[in-house]
Image 1 (cartoon, helix red, strand yellow):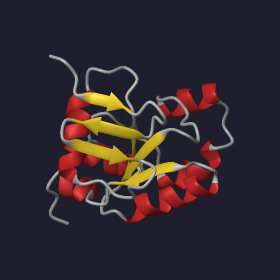
Image 2 (cartoon, helix red, strand yellow):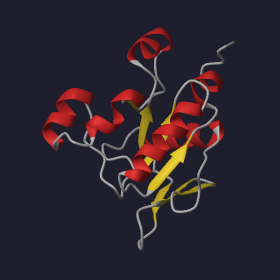
Image 3 (tube, helix red, strand yellow):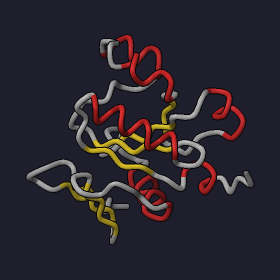
Image 4 (cartoon, helix red, strand yellow):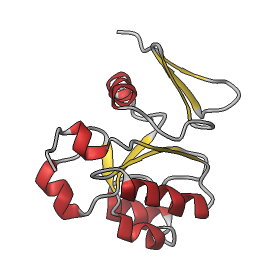
Length: 144
């Protein structure tokens, strides 16, 4: 199977997956459908063109699980995580510390905390941030 992913040669922040195009420069939200396509088409890649971050607390993640390819970085730990060096960040959160030019997608339970996480990352100088505002509620069809 050949991949449908294309990277813009000028910037790594435009990802084209089949008929879906995600411009991390201009897009602030991602739909469930586009996120499903992105995850499905990128599963085989070790270096994905995005990092999906679940900002719910660990207990919430244990109760529902997380979206495939997502990493957990609880909202209340975001500000302190910036002070960690790359090695200690990876040991604590089990993924590479995001860089300010990485493509980051955030979600939580309902979309509010992921928006707050984006503001914290913006304040720290991160540039390419997208909110999956449907969040875990939509993804897992939670009746909350």
